[in-house]
Amino acid sequence: MQKITTFLWFADQAEQAAEFYTSLFANSRILDVQRYGEGGPGPAGTAMTVSFELMGQRFLALNGGPQFTFNEAVSLYVDCESQEEVDELWAKLTADGGEEAPCGWLKDKWGLSWQIIPTRLTELLSHPDPAKAQQAMQAMLKMQKIEIKALEEAAGV
Image (cartoon, rainbow, N blue to C red; front, side):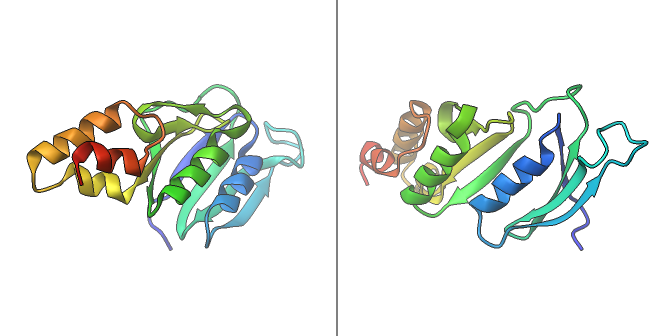
């Protein structure tokens, strides 16, 4: 069992969010749904908590009401192997009210921040030639969704 689990507070759509997130990644699944009973603060029968895994990492989502919302201080970082993976996740996570943000960041329709980052960006930013790394950094700072080809062209590799 995973000792530390990321806990996510939703107003009232934890179950829908968990279903959506598990549809995005292989080896992901809903583990358990605890529902409010008659005496709970939420409507009886609605999800109170949803336990789920994304690629083996556990999360727990709560329908806790609108008192707290997500902000950029916490984000989920996804290490992408290809431009196709970046493009697919970017499109799905920004759909239906999600928002693009600079440097590979976005917010999904629930306001949860994600970083959709190609492995190639990390490689270029740690290039042994500091000038090439700096050129990649400058190109990345002008992007929202990260474009690998444009990074490579900017770095001259």
